[in-house]
Image 1 (cartoon, rainbow, N blue to C red):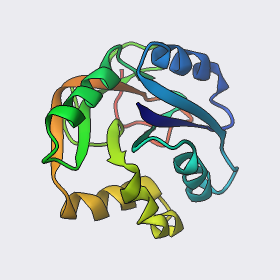
Image 2 (cartoon, rainbow, N blue to C red; image 1 turned 30 degrees about the horizontal axis):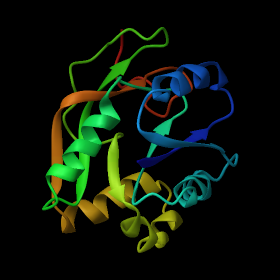
Image 3 (cartoon, rainbow, N blue to C red; image 1 turned 180 degrees about the vertical axis):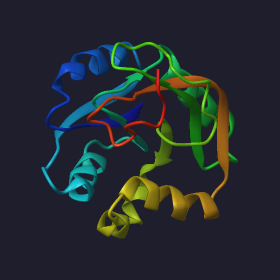
Image 4 (spheres, rainbow, N blue to C red; image 1 turned 45 degrees about the vertical axis):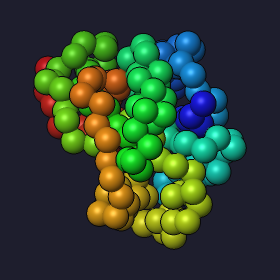
Length: 168
């Protein structure tokens, strides 16, 4: 099992149930973590501290996971022990859930990290954006495995920090 935290952000409540529904049949432990207004790094840190599984990741509260994505991640983890970090492609969707991008192949959202990597890098939570700091730091040192399939859909909307990245 993989521990997944969902950081809730005020103003995006309308999509949380869809996000949770997308995880319903996935082999994950889900932790919904209320975000701390004005302190994203501390909020993300609280999320990563949830659970006890050897593998951790997050899903944003306004996004959704493609059915079977975590099964594919778990399979890849077990079949490829020579790799350290695992990820899948993603695509952008609009407010109504319509796909508005081609598959995005660079690691961004659905990334499974060994919990030990998080535990040994707590200082990333001092950064303005700990997600990117964690990627920057760990991707230089460790071997990544890409599952060449879309596993994640991130929602592009007016309250998203990706606002305007893709237009429909």
